[in-house]
Image (cartoon, rainbow, N blue to C red):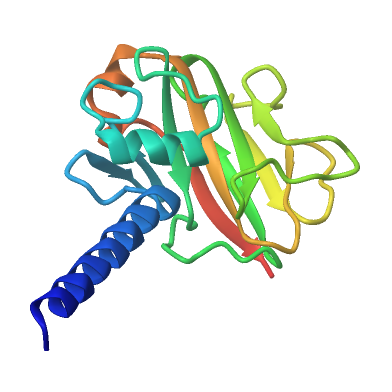
Length: 191
């Protein structure tokens, strides 16, 4: 084979591989790096919104985290599974329960597989510090399901979904040790 043909094939293979890996990193996310923190079913990456994040992380946040704030203001955790480690099934009902997250303000939101809010006739997209109802002991419990719940409902549809909890102005203890922060549990109730 001629040198020019070998060079062309090598350049094409390199370009395809490079573009493919870049697409996978940006559109599939970059969690799993050394700054990836796990806390039960919740995950975060401490480089998000900081100077430590690289070009791929910033591109991924631009695609998946529309209007995301920087880390000095907000800490984001995302769950793709319940607390038992099972992937979310939109046909099932889940209970997200715990204490109020330690932050000035917080919210828990469901997002569709395309990273956008899930359209629903009720116009409900999340529960938050201002909207969630608590039991007598001060704990909250929210229902994540396709069927409406009387209180603390986070609607989903037939497509895949994820849950994101936002800590706005998180307590210094959460920032110092996010792997041990008191985060809500996610329990599958029934399918």
